[in-house]
Length: 358
Image (cartoon, rainbow, N blue to C red; front, side, top):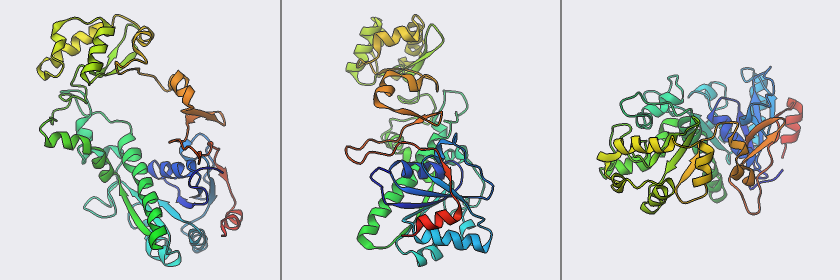
């Protein structure tokens, strides 16, 4: 085992999406994570978010199962759960009894709506949580419906990643106070937090409520994706004047209409003209001309292409484990290297209890 979190123990109550992602990050960083699953839950090596940890079957509805879970929690530094508010309390595994037994425990709670509020007990998914933060409204083309951004914003960026930050901060605070605490991580809060940059622009009068009308949402001709002659796409992000000038130079664009880069009134027409330019060559031809320059260019790669890109290969951004191609742990550390991904494995309750004793 390696990583800066070596020696930290985490009890994870199995769920979907952000909770497992948070536990995966902790395991990648070297923490010893034990995943509690329902009886009969098979190990799934293709579920990348369950990598690098053992899972143990426990019936949390039975008194014996609850007692076993509490014993494991007694020896943990961190706990990760993603049930609706009140579920862990009904199981006798809420923060109060757990912190009474283990005062240094950091108890992480991952939900969509949070532990309180009018919607706290309602069902929902990523698309619902990011809808009330303003984030979903901002994503999509002008005069079209908002586009679901997969579940990057709610589940992962504003969910699992946010919970991870909270757990690490509270773990650091334990060293000072000797006391654990509860982390209430809500995807509604997290997706709003991820929108801080845009709310700042809006406060300055530099961001419109109209989708596709802003510099970073596809409104500007110099920050968008374009189809090439072969039907593949490239991404352009030439915001700064010097990068924009280089893009024009490399593309052979001499049309004086392009001189008014920040004139938003020109953007719709300039997008059409730039689209015509990019349709004159294939994606590979544009890569040969622009990639690696300061024109702020990149090819838009699919899931199969991305692991094979030269930059990703040089950095080891993707790794293959057990026949499954997957993103490598990140970020990189100069000394405490993250652990290499391992396939999840099953562990008997007896072995889990024996291994967990401090």
